[in-house]
Length: 266
Image: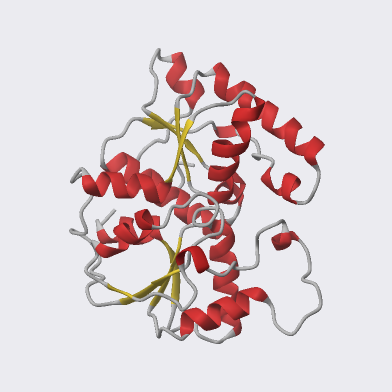
C-alpha cells in the first residue's frame, strides 16, 4: 500500500496495537488492491485522506472480498461466507465508519451486511470528497488546472440508481471550473458500462454491440477531453472502450479521486 507514497498507510492492527483508533476505515476492495489501474485510485484516496489530516486505517491482509461478485453470479452461500468473515473482522475492531473506493463494495457493506450483523456508516469516496470540499479542506488549487476542460461523468449503477448518489461526484467536478457535459443517458437514466452482475468476469452474450462500446460512444458524442468515473469496474470498461475506438490519445478516463488529487497537487 505504501509503495509510491511518501507516507505510511497504517493498518487497523497497527493502530490498535498502539492504543489508537481511526476516524474512518478505508475499505480498499479487490480491484483497488490487485488491479494495477485501480491501485492508482487507491493511492489517490490515501493522498487525499493524508492531505486533510483525517486519521484513517486499512485492514490490509485482514480484508477479504465483500462477496458481491459471488452474490451477483448467484452463489449466495459463498457470498454469506465471505460477508461473515469480513463482519467478524469489522466488529472485532468496533468499526463505525467506512469509506470505499468502489460502488460495489459500498453497496454491499451498506445494504447487504446489516442483515448479517454488520451495521456501519458507509460512504463512497466521492461523498467524502464532497464533504471535504464543503468543509473547505479540499480546494482545486495548487496542482493541475482543469479549468475549461470538457469533462463528462459516467454514473456507476451501484452508486447512482442503486444508492441515489448523483450530486457528490458532480460537486467534485464542478469546483474544478471545468466544463461538465452530460451524456444523453445520465443520472437515473444512465446506462450500465457492462461490468455489473459479474459480467466483467465472463465473455459477453452474442449481440450486435458490447455494452461498453455503446456507452463510450455516448460519452464521445459529448466531445470530452476526460471521461470521469468513480468505480474500478467502470474504469476498466470505459478505458477498453476508448482504446477500441482509437481515442486513447485524445480522451482520458480518470477516477474522480485522481482528478481531485491532481487538482490539489497531491
